[in-house]
Image 1 (tube, rainbow, N blue to C red):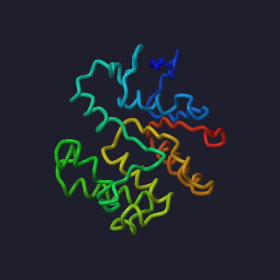
Image 2 (image 1 turned 180 degrees about the vertical axis):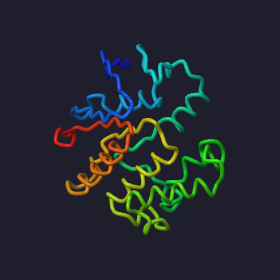
Image 3 (image 1 turned 120 degrees about the horizontal axis):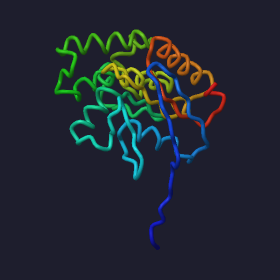
Length: 199
């Protein structure tokens, strides 16, 4: 059998301004995650352009694209993608280690550690810093994932079904965290299949 080309996204025209909270709603399989992957530079479009600050992501070299993903964009996924070998503090700290060697843009390991600890405090996780992800509830794990996504102070936060794996009350808590971030000026693009979440 030959491969059949499937157009997941067609005719999408989206402009996200700094400080906006944009929710994209659609059924499962409608291309929402693909849209986030394009915005985050994880995938490249077959045609058309994806621009950040008027720079076409598809024209960036691998090193530029890696830097864009690590410094400009924070990713929050439905299934957390935390490393069970690391504790909560280390999971949040991880992007600083990846950014530009062990210390990233923060200038020193101590500054990066302080930033990670501040994020844990903001997210109500300071008492869980030494716990492993498997010792946490789903809502706590998602808050760790949000902290990790914010570690390098990204200009754009991409959230892929951040409440999809959580019960209703915990999902509402995560939405409240995202709304607080938005109120503080964070630009967020979130995709969801749940219309109630997008309101």
